[in-house]
Image 1 (cartoon, rainbow over the protein chains, first blue to last red):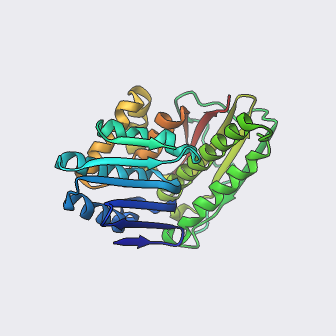
Image 2: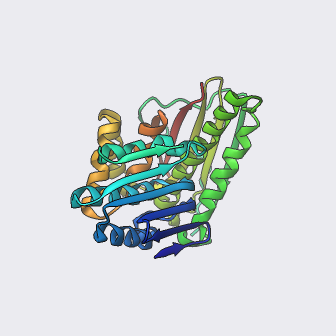
Image 3: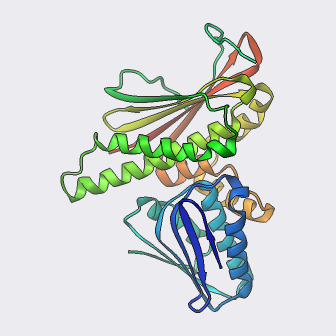
Length: 114
Length: 200
């Protein structure tokens, strides 16, 4: 499963249950994120034991994108079947600022910033 | 419909938060847009292009000579890009297209902060809803309000109201607004959003 746009790429690897987001995500409102949310919902519905969200290549995310990722985290939390790890980078300062709020939504989620 | 705005501003501004004028900034950069020729979908990518340009421009004022200053430069660049993009997305989303009133974004550099000023028109009848949200933003705890909004958006399958909340919660900014009715055009109000981003 993947969603590709002019400046971004979101892909799901079934074998490792890893979602990778890269590029710049500045899509327009909830409507712009529908294809990505659909992919995220499918992954949550498959209920893998451990889901990894790999964001090291994600240079920029606007607030509508933060909303889409939050929705996914809440979905996984509410299903109570999967553990969640988010891997990010300190190279993009926004990740340190914004991703910590995802952990507040799901406290047993693991957030790794390298 | 063409409208001339010169001298049309009412003096009865409405202020929310600690709004301060631009003053004597040692450096500033202003961009004005009249974007209505294209649909909002067609011009959406311009928000990001402008935000990145503004962010790159200011890196010259925060040179990265060593590791610590390089880190600071990256932090400021990232924050300016995020905030400018969110402000422009809002301005484009809520501008009253029929008014043909330009959108402007200005960044002003001060010793310990960068100030953003974004002005756009809105329809007078939309003021109440925006002002109610602003009152809530200024009186509530932004971190708690942000989490509540994320839960609400997920439950109601929508997005919105997160731009200002992320600026407050993640970037430690201060926000204020000025509303100016246009005397000659009572259906139009201009709103200026001010964001103070600490750089020290």
